[in-house]
Image 1 (tube, rainbow, N blue to C red):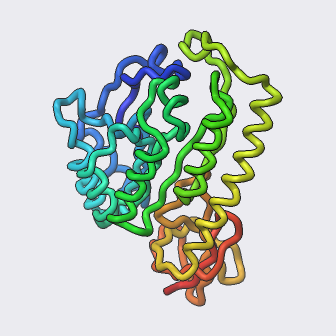
Image 2: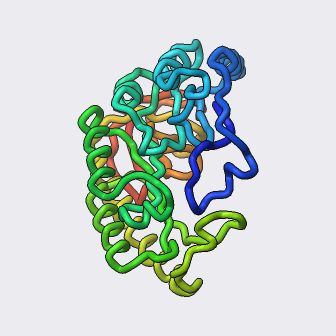
Length: 292
């Protein structure tokens, strides 16, 4: 469910503001009306999307509007879970962390747009943060909800990226224990500042860095999934697999990108059921669980 369009940030590698314009929030009343209609059609999970969900409400004069909207959406009849995508680390407020980490019906799922972990690279990208600040944010989130899901995407091969910058990213991925990680190679976008920068690695070198960090990401995600063995989770059932097995997603698993949970159940389940499970095993990023 789209909550806003456009973007006011000016990341040096991104052309989105040039063709989608300034950030514009949809009025809360419109979103609540659409959400109620979707729930009446049988929708169980609302997935809120925009170019920058943490900016929601700023053009309406209320920077805390997302914190106010989420409990209202979660409280609608028929809505089982509300999930938010694409959060800018620079704009994640403690109040938003509190709401997302502790509100019943709101998935404790933090899709944080880190992009890198080296301060110099992030400055060249015209973005906030570094490894220490990002680790502090993750520590805050997990202090509120130890089981919270955290995902992010990272760009390697940005112009001027050094061995030291890559080491910072390696240390961050190893320390942060993210649930889901996307690794992408840098490519020029027409009309962006980054396309004019010097020091761009060759395509072959960028591909090598992508392969190296994708391998590390797979290891980290597998370790994080293994850490969840024994946890109690709430899974949204999506389809039967046969032989008493059902495929679904826990709160830390967004559709299509973050893995799935296979639930083993003696009693029949139906798509749309929200069930409490205990994790009994992991297969890469995917989990295996039994009804609790």
